[in-house]
Length: 34
Image (tube, rainbow, N blue to C red; front, top):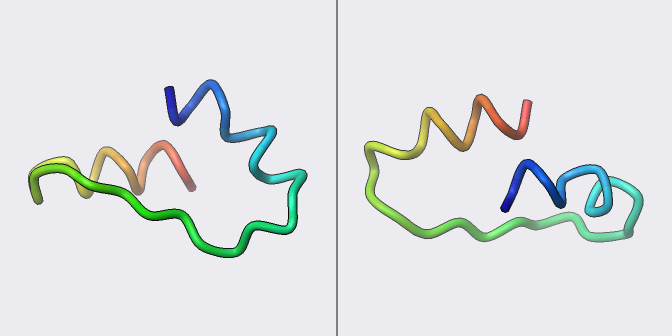
């Protein structure tokens, strides 16, 4: 879901994205968002 909506988020004035989940997912989030 994050990857699908990322381009729409990048077009907004949002400056903070809150993520939740196990710490083992942090690298996955980094890979998706970078």
